[in-house]
Length: 411
View: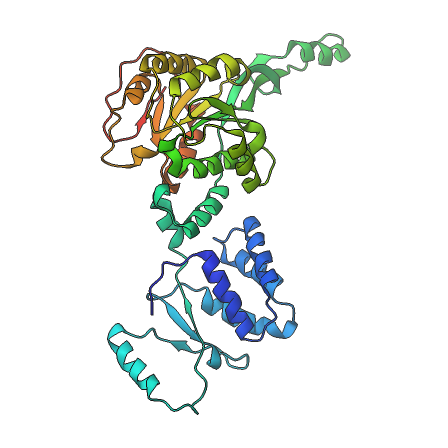
């Protein structure tokens, strides 16, 4: 038996094969419907997963007991490396299916010799399906670097990224609304008390009004970021879809391109294809300073108001003028509420921000965080939830001495 780490889609295929082998009418179309339905069901709750699968795969009342037995056995957590099901001994009238213990490596040669000596008239070979482990797949993918993912793992990571919940918190606006605050509402006070002949019998008050913070994403798609570019675009798409406020998205290599319209309200694969067709410097050189200058002068006034948070995603390799980068990122830092630099190389323990671009940018960055795997994205989500609870100190600060660790400047 071969040991597999397994994943959900792989086990769904095996489960469909098992049900078909037991005589149930389970076709590929119904399995596709089940996969799509899981986008709206939390697979962490076994009951939700069970009733979703049963409603889509069982269409005969007599098949319910058989489905229940197959589901309980197939989707349970295996005690060892895996469990094998003997389909010939799995019958509806039996109380439970027969389990075959996985063969030990030292006995596999003897078993193969015995099978070769059997006569042709023996009973037909038992059909075996191996159940691979699913419960640990998410934890493995959480820690795996995006640059090392296989095609199957990439599909699973995209699905997990789509399930993430993002919340940027609220900002206090200058406007007030009727409530139970400490400031009197003079207009309502006059209007309500006129009915009592001018006596102050009611004392209405106002409280501050809160709104979500805007979010701006500026992502590097140069050649040095090619291994991370598509997943980071998926990340930008997921943020735009999950947040109630509008998310402005930009990409840059040698020049800046706005992709907010391409990522909004469309199919994900179609959106990525349209972005690739709109960006003419994909996987080119890197000019961070010139791209930030374009953003500051052409887009800053349009999108940076109302306490915006800026996520700048780049590895810091820059072929432009470091002095220009220093000036433009300082300007960007002054006009936004918080500037967060996400660097995929920061996930490595050996990484040191020694490039000219990073040295020029670090004094003007509020948070310097990794973005190389799912775990780093989950930490970013928690950090963004607490952004509004952090007070902003003076803009004057000393250069940052950073060596192989994430930096968070608490304002």
